[in-house]
Length: 87
Image (cartoon, rainbow, N blue to C red):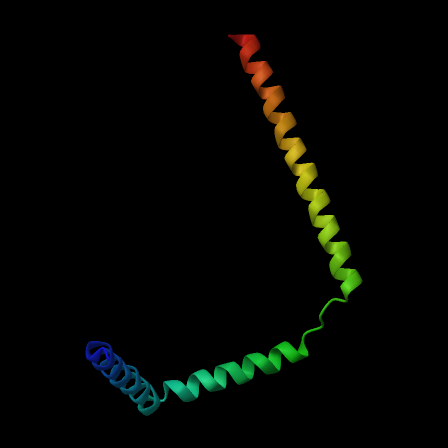
């Protein structure tokens, strides 16, 4: 077998477990767990859109993007023609 691999695996295991131990001792793990629990609770309070509301909003966004794109292209064309007419 490849002993170098197992040595590297052991070293990285000690480093990761040591880092986790230090984070646990410093209280970071508890803070992260508390943050995740509070986030989950807040997300439960949210009102999520229905599938139809989401679809209608998506269609509206696509229509607005296309309209703004066409406006940008049209404005660019008009400005280009105006600049070229002065030259």
